[in-house]
Image 1 (cartoon, one colour):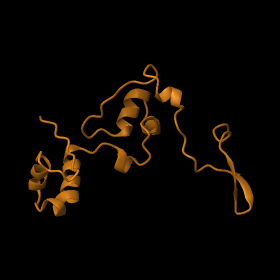
Image 2: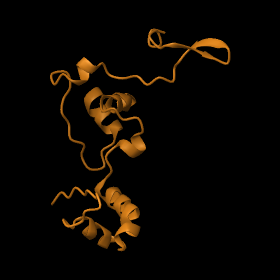
Image 3: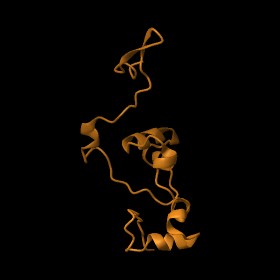
Image 4: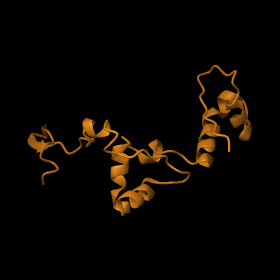
Length: 124
């Protein structure tokens, strides 16, 4: 297989083998060239499979979407829905804010907070 051709050889338990645990990356010249990829804004509740289907005609190419965006863990690095993001913020900042539920979100929007809390608010 040509895919593994350029992977480094390592010694594992006394045997020389290809290190297939290396992460593949886009060539830097490709990722830095604006003419070789299209800008895209992920829509609410859109998954990598949806984008792969639209662009490549198959959900099987979702790995290309993730690779092009340098995403290793799609469960934690892919954009959350508004609802999931709010729940994440509430869970993360409840103790720090001293608030509960939606009151935590209001606390995060307070411009006077200097505890390195950044909340992106997108008005509807």
